[in-house]
Image (cartoon, rainbow, N blue to C red):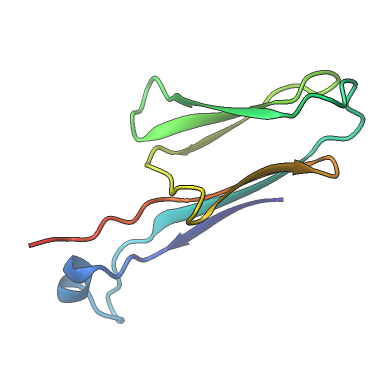
Length: 112
């Protein structure tokens, strides 16, 4: 199960320049990735993820998951923005052969 949550960000700038009839453009707010790893040969090793910049476009990054045999690596092309910390909207755990990586992107407030 992989989910991408999008929505409009109603910061002070968008409130003054947009309304409900003409909303601001939607942006990616968070990702929820649940990857099922059945029949791992090495039960003691935990799957890992690696984030690398996308060479052709700096607005995107490649999120790669590695678990070892018999599974091949899985990669996703995601938006390249800063993630929230583990206290606010971040989960990375491996339990019952399910690797969960959930993260929210940081929201930046407009200042005068």
